[in-house]
Image (cartoon, rainbow, N blue to C red):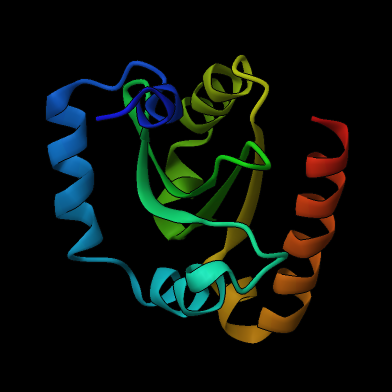
Amino acid sequence: MDELEKNMYYGATPVTLIKAKQLRERMTPAERILWEKLRNKQICGVRFRRQHPIEIFIVDFYCHAAKLVIEIDGGIHNKTKIYDAMRTKEIEKYDIFVLKYTNVEITSNLNKVISDIATIVKQRINTL
């Protein structure tokens, strides 16, 4: 693993890397929909990674060039608000911006989601 890749994982352990790989094999329907729009540098020419380890966490999508995490929250997140807030705070300590959407937003308003992501990627790249 080269130095850039080590930096992108922010100290993730081999166990977390393995778990992330397993999660890539069983993405949710909303994750699959968004991944089709993020993959292959379709947004602003930047690369997104899916089910990406950051420290002890695995985020749904990560763009290292913009230091941007995108999370898609399903119904289970209604019960994990305190944990989610702590997790976001831990990720943000690396100057990573965390953007959250619900499954419903992905399935019902995908064009707006993509537009929002593109706007934030441009802003982040211009300020980093």
